[in-house]
Length: 200
Image (cartoon, rainbow, N blue to C red; front, side, top):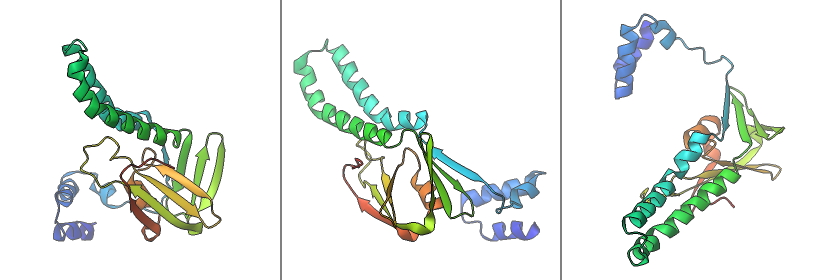
């Protein structure tokens, strides 16, 4: 255990390592922090959760709220609402279309992984299918590189193409980019930039 602590002290280049160092020295259960059995079987499940839907919709809902507030303050005078609606309404609609599109491809879908295993399971409703990562031909990632000012710029998705031609579509409403990198071979991920990340 002392060797692990020494390594952390010698490589203290981030706040995170300093934080870990503090806990290693000051808590009685420090052996549990250092000695983790990475071979212990663990299952990771990813699926669509309500909080992800709310988080994905919040930008569009804020725009809608702004339009409603302006409408209430101006007694819905169309002469005043014309310019805000001209600016915000198309963005609002386009943002909601992307969110609904990603939800449609994510509902009733789950992916399950086990650490140190090349296999993963796709659950779709009451059906399930077992896949092997070694049979993946390519993983195409579709994401935006905008300023973050548009409601759809946080949406991204992946097309996992198997050697037999089958394609598994995964939205980041199910798995984040970090989750994808954690469970799949990075060399097979090809990144594509798109302005409007609607799943086709």
